Image (tube, rainbow, N blue to C red; front, top):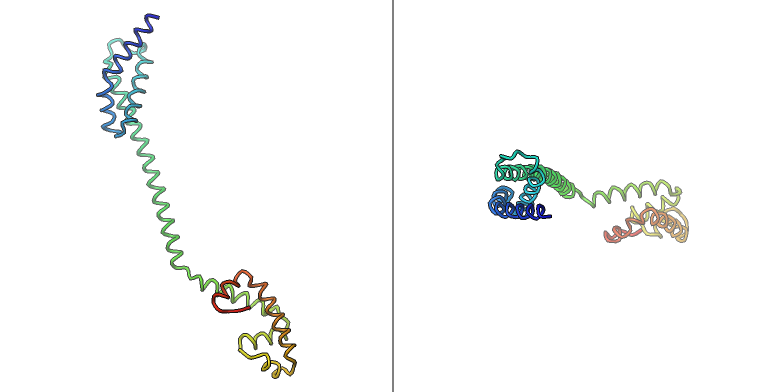
Length: 189
C-alpha cells in the first residue's frame, strides 16, 4: 500500500513538472489546447505503464517529449487526411452545384411543357373518331363557330356540340396534369 502511494506521488510530481512545457510544445503544433492536453496525458500514461520495462538510465523527459511529438505528428497527419478528404468532398459538391445551376439556367419550362402538351394533343387527336376529330379541329384550330361548322357539314348544332364535348372530355383526361398551366396560359380544354 505504501509503495502504491509512493508511485502515485511520483506520478503526480512528474505529471505536474512537465505538464506546462510539454502541453505548450504540443499546442504549438496542433493549435488546440484540449487536443494538446490529451496528447500529453496519453504520453504520460504510456510512459507510466512502460516505466518498469524501460532501461534505468533512460532520459525520462526526452522519452515523454518524444511520445508527445509522435502523437502530435499522428494527430496532424490524421487532420491532413481529413482536411484533404473534406476538400475533395467540397470540390465535388461545388462541381455538382455548378452543374445543377447550369442545367437549371438552360432549362426552358415552357419548351418542355409545350413539347409534351403538343405530343399529348397530337396523340389524342389520332384517337378521336374521324367525325369528332374533324369537328374539333374546325372548332379549336380553325376558330369556326358551331353554327359555321354545322352549316359546312350540313348537320345540327347539337351534333357539333356533342362531338366537341366528347373531344374535350378526352382531352381533359389526357391533359389533367397540365390543366392548371393551360388555364394560366389562357387555353381551355
